Amino acid sequence: MGGISGFLTKFSPFTNLFESILEKIPIKLPIPLEKMVSYVSYPRTGRHLQRYDNRGFRLVVGCLPYRYKKLEDQASSNEEEIEVLVISAQNGKGMLFPKGGWENDESMEDAAIRETLEEAGVLGIIECKLGKWSYKSKRQSIFHEGHMFPLLVKKELDLWPEKNIRERKWVTISKAREECPHLWMKEALEELVRRHVQPATDEKVN
Image 1 (cartoon, helix red, strand yellow):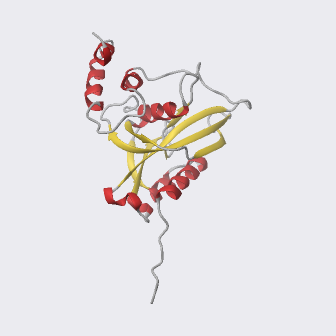
Image 2 (cartoon, one colour):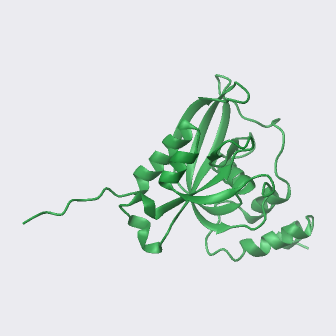
């Protein structure tokens, strides 16, 4: 059996369900279907492929998943017309955006999509990088360099690898500012707002 069907027979019934969901998505996925299925069937563990920079900083990538409340709001001047998806931290302290280690055998964009799928269970269109931030991990006392991308969400999955250990929820931009405890993620959020919210123009008074 060849092609995608032959590939999927190696995996569990859950994979077949996932394939049927993906094939109904009316967008071109940024990475091949086979790779997306493998992300869900066999989420990565361990850090043997983890990338580090020349300073010894662990390289981390992730996404700010977002959507518009209404289709016509895509050129909105009001940030409250945009919602972002946040997930619970594993230590239970606050809500944050999905992110994780960038590994040697994947591009930065692929890693960001994979981490977002594993932790938040969403698919969509990844956009140009928001920026990079250096920060120190509170849990491990080591330095990281974080790279974040906007992800315009097109599909929310009912099943995903970390469903049982994380809560996910859509919130307004202002609520995300309140609930996210990490300064560097808040700065990435502000860059997202800067790109997607058009400044209001004052009407001329005759």
